Image 1 (cartoon, rainbow, N blue to C red):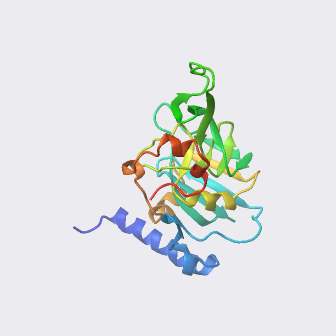
Image 2: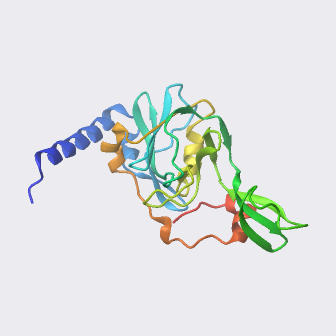
Length: 232
Protein backbone atom coordinates (compact mmCIF):
# COMPACT_ATOMS: atom_id res chain seq x y z
CA UNK A 1 0.00 0.00 0.00
CA UNK A 2 1.37 3.46 -0.95
CA UNK A 3 1.42 5.85 2.04
CA UNK A 4 -0.93 8.83 1.82
CA UNK A 5 0.44 12.33 1.28
CA UNK A 6 -0.32 13.16 4.92
CA UNK A 7 1.62 10.15 6.13
CA UNK A 8 4.61 11.06 3.92
CA UNK A 9 4.56 14.56 5.42
CA UNK A 10 4.55 13.15 8.96
CA UNK A 11 7.43 10.78 8.18
CA UNK A 12 9.38 13.62 6.60
CA UNK A 13 8.84 15.81 9.67
CA UNK A 14 10.14 13.06 11.98
CA UNK A 15 13.20 12.54 9.77
CA UNK A 16 13.98 16.26 9.73
CA UNK A 17 13.63 16.49 13.50
CA UNK A 18 16.00 13.60 14.12
CA UNK A 19 18.50 15.00 11.61
CA UNK A 20 18.33 18.37 13.34
CA UNK A 21 19.10 16.70 16.68
CA UNK A 22 22.58 15.77 15.48
CA UNK A 23 23.37 19.48 15.04
CA UNK A 24 21.35 21.07 17.84
CA UNK A 25 21.50 18.76 20.84
CA UNK A 26 24.82 17.87 22.51
CA UNK A 27 24.96 14.09 22.66
CA UNK A 28 21.74 13.67 20.71
CA UNK A 29 23.36 11.81 17.84
CA UNK A 30 24.89 9.26 20.16
CA UNK A 31 22.19 9.11 22.86
CA UNK A 32 19.00 10.68 21.57
CA UNK A 33 17.57 7.56 19.94
CA UNK A 34 19.03 5.14 22.45
CA UNK A 35 16.82 4.35 25.39
CA UNK A 36 18.40 5.03 28.76
CA UNK A 37 19.11 1.76 30.53
CA UNK A 38 18.50 0.64 34.08
CA UNK A 39 17.89 -2.61 35.91
CA UNK A 40 14.47 -2.85 34.25
CA UNK A 41 15.81 -2.36 30.69
CA UNK A 42 14.93 0.31 28.15
CA UNK A 43 12.93 2.96 29.94
CA UNK A 44 13.35 6.36 28.29
CA UNK A 45 14.34 8.35 25.20
CA UNK A 46 17.52 10.39 25.54
CA UNK A 47 20.26 10.62 28.12
CA UNK A 48 19.97 12.22 31.55
CA UNK A 49 22.03 15.46 31.32
CA UNK A 50 24.63 15.94 34.05
CA UNK A 51 25.24 19.10 36.03
CA UNK A 52 22.98 21.90 37.15
CA UNK A 53 19.37 22.08 36.01
CA UNK A 54 19.07 24.87 33.38
CA UNK A 55 16.81 27.79 34.26
CA UNK A 56 14.81 27.26 31.05
CA UNK A 57 14.04 23.58 31.70
CA UNK A 58 10.33 22.71 31.42
CA UNK A 59 8.26 19.53 31.57
CA UNK A 60 5.41 18.77 29.19
CA UNK A 61 2.88 15.96 29.55
CA UNK A 62 0.62 14.63 26.80
CA UNK A 63 -2.38 12.81 28.24
CA UNK A 64 -3.50 11.22 24.96
CA UNK A 65 0.00 10.02 24.06
CA UNK A 66 0.73 9.15 27.71
CA UNK A 67 4.16 10.74 27.44
CA UNK A 68 6.43 13.00 29.51
CA UNK A 69 8.88 15.35 27.78
CA UNK A 70 11.72 17.31 29.41
CA UNK A 71 12.89 20.29 27.36
CA UNK A 72 15.83 22.69 27.61
CA UNK A 73 15.49 25.85 25.56
CA UNK A 74 12.54 24.33 23.70
CA UNK A 75 14.45 21.17 22.69
CA UNK A 76 13.62 17.73 24.07
CA UNK A 77 16.48 16.19 26.06
CA UNK A 78 14.58 13.29 27.67
CA UNK A 79 11.18 11.62 27.29
CA UNK A 80 9.38 8.61 28.70
CA UNK A 81 6.07 6.80 28.65
CA UNK A 82 3.73 7.49 31.55
CA UNK A 83 0.38 6.25 32.82
CA UNK A 84 -2.35 8.85 33.36
CA UNK A 85 -5.60 9.08 35.29
CA UNK A 86 -8.44 6.73 34.42
CA UNK A 87 -12.04 7.89 33.84
CA UNK A 88 -13.38 9.43 37.02
CA UNK A 89 -9.85 10.17 38.26
CA UNK A 90 -8.53 12.51 35.58
CA UNK A 91 -5.03 13.93 35.73
CA UNK A 92 -5.28 17.73 36.15
CA UNK A 93 -4.54 19.82 33.07
CA UNK A 94 -2.95 23.26 33.01
CA UNK A 95 0.32 24.92 33.95
CA UNK A 96 1.93 24.04 37.29
CA UNK A 97 5.31 23.97 39.00
CA UNK A 98 7.06 21.24 40.94
CA UNK A 99 6.32 21.98 44.60
CA UNK A 100 7.77 18.93 46.35
CA UNK A 101 10.27 16.10 45.80
CA UNK A 102 10.53 13.01 48.02
CA UNK A 103 12.48 9.87 47.20
CA UNK A 104 10.28 7.88 49.59
CA UNK A 105 6.64 8.90 49.62
CA UNK A 106 3.58 6.99 50.76
CA UNK A 107 0.00 7.81 49.84
CA UNK A 108 -2.31 9.39 52.37
CA UNK A 109 -5.36 8.24 50.39
CA UNK A 110 -4.69 4.62 49.40
CA UNK A 111 -2.89 2.02 51.46
CA UNK A 112 -3.21 -0.70 54.08
CA UNK A 113 -4.09 -1.37 57.69
CA UNK A 114 -1.26 -3.41 59.19
CA UNK A 115 -1.16 -5.49 62.37
CA UNK A 116 1.91 -7.69 62.53
CA UNK A 117 1.74 -10.05 59.52
CA UNK A 118 -1.87 -9.13 58.81
CA UNK A 119 -2.38 -6.57 56.03
CA UNK A 120 -5.77 -5.25 54.85
CA UNK A 121 -6.12 -2.87 51.83
CA UNK A 122 -7.95 0.36 52.61
CA UNK A 123 -8.72 3.88 51.50
CA UNK A 124 -7.45 6.03 54.34
CA UNK A 125 -10.19 7.68 56.36
CA UNK A 126 -12.93 5.36 55.14
CA UNK A 127 -14.27 2.99 57.75
CA UNK A 128 -11.58 3.72 60.33
CA UNK A 129 -9.15 1.33 61.93
CA UNK A 130 -10.13 -2.36 62.12
CA UNK A 131 -9.33 -2.26 65.81
CA UNK A 132 -6.62 -2.01 68.43
CA UNK A 133 -3.08 -2.71 67.26
CA UNK A 134 -3.64 -1.73 63.62
CA UNK A 135 -1.77 1.13 61.93
CA UNK A 136 -2.03 2.69 58.48
CA UNK A 137 0.72 2.32 55.85
CA UNK A 138 0.25 4.25 52.61
CA UNK A 139 0.78 2.83 49.15
CA UNK A 140 4.44 3.38 48.11
CA UNK A 141 5.15 6.06 45.51
CA UNK A 142 8.96 6.12 45.01
CA UNK A 143 10.62 9.23 43.54
CA UNK A 144 7.61 11.45 44.18
CA UNK A 145 7.55 14.74 42.24
CA UNK A 146 4.44 16.73 43.17
CA UNK A 147 3.07 19.41 40.84
CA UNK A 148 -0.39 19.94 42.44
CA UNK A 149 -1.58 19.03 45.95
CA UNK A 150 -2.12 15.27 45.97
CA UNK A 151 -0.92 14.78 42.38
CA UNK A 152 2.57 13.93 41.20
CA UNK A 153 4.93 11.79 39.15
CA UNK A 154 6.14 8.58 40.78
CA UNK A 155 7.46 5.11 40.06
CA UNK A 156 4.93 2.37 39.37
CA UNK A 157 3.43 0.06 36.79
CA UNK A 158 2.67 1.63 33.40
CA UNK A 159 -0.29 0.30 31.40
CA UNK A 160 -1.23 1.00 27.79
CA UNK A 161 -4.57 2.47 28.90
CA UNK A 162 -5.21 5.16 31.57
CA UNK A 163 -5.06 3.44 34.94
CA UNK A 164 -4.06 5.77 37.79
CA UNK A 165 -6.04 7.84 40.28
CA UNK A 166 -4.72 10.99 38.60
CA UNK A 167 -0.99 10.70 39.26
CA UNK A 168 1.59 10.15 36.52
CA UNK A 169 3.36 6.82 36.88
CA UNK A 170 6.80 6.13 35.36
CA UNK A 171 8.17 2.68 34.58
CA UNK A 172 11.28 1.30 36.29
CA UNK A 173 14.31 3.56 36.46
CA UNK A 174 12.59 6.27 34.40
CA UNK A 175 11.20 7.57 37.71
CA UNK A 176 14.63 8.06 39.30
CA UNK A 177 15.94 9.65 36.10
CA UNK A 178 13.04 12.12 35.97
CA UNK A 179 13.53 12.87 39.67
CA UNK A 180 17.09 14.04 38.91
CA UNK A 181 15.96 16.15 35.95
CA UNK A 182 13.67 18.52 37.86
CA UNK A 183 13.75 20.71 40.93
CA UNK A 184 11.20 22.56 43.03
CA UNK A 185 9.94 25.35 40.79
CA UNK A 186 10.39 23.53 37.45
CA UNK A 187 7.36 24.36 35.22
CA UNK A 188 5.03 21.47 34.32
CA UNK A 189 2.55 21.88 31.45
CA UNK A 190 -0.14 19.19 31.09
CA UNK A 191 -2.60 19.04 28.20
CA UNK A 192 -4.43 16.55 25.98
CA UNK A 193 -1.71 16.77 23.31
CA UNK A 194 1.77 18.25 22.84
CA UNK A 195 3.65 19.15 19.61
CA UNK A 196 6.35 16.67 20.64
CA UNK A 197 3.86 13.80 20.18
CA UNK A 198 4.61 13.88 16.42
CA UNK A 199 8.39 13.71 16.83
CA UNK A 200 10.02 12.27 19.94
CA UNK A 201 6.67 10.90 21.04
CA UNK A 202 6.87 8.30 18.27
CA UNK A 203 10.22 6.95 19.51
CA UNK A 204 9.92 6.52 23.28
CA UNK A 205 9.84 2.94 24.64
CA UNK A 206 6.37 1.66 25.51
CA UNK A 207 5.29 -0.82 28.17
CA UNK A 208 2.32 -2.88 29.21
CA UNK A 209 2.81 -3.81 32.83
CA UNK A 210 -0.82 -5.03 33.03
CA UNK A 211 0.49 -8.59 32.78
CA UNK A 212 2.91 -8.14 35.66
CA UNK A 213 1.77 -9.96 38.84
CA UNK A 214 0.47 -7.66 41.54
CA UNK A 215 3.11 -7.07 44.23
CA UNK A 216 2.31 -8.74 47.53
CA UNK A 217 0.86 -6.62 50.31
CA UNK A 218 3.90 -7.50 52.37
CA UNK A 219 6.17 -6.04 49.68
CA UNK A 220 4.10 -2.87 49.34
CA UNK A 221 4.16 -2.18 53.08
CA UNK A 222 7.91 -2.80 53.41
CA UNK A 223 10.96 -0.67 52.63
CA UNK A 224 11.75 -3.07 49.77
CA UNK A 225 9.21 -1.20 47.63
CA UNK A 226 11.68 1.71 47.54
CA UNK A 227 14.82 -0.33 46.86
CA UNK A 228 14.34 -1.81 43.38
CA UNK A 229 12.67 -0.52 40.18
CA UNK A 230 9.09 -1.48 39.38
CA UNK A 231 8.16 -2.93 36.01
CA UNK A 232 9.90 -5.20 33.56
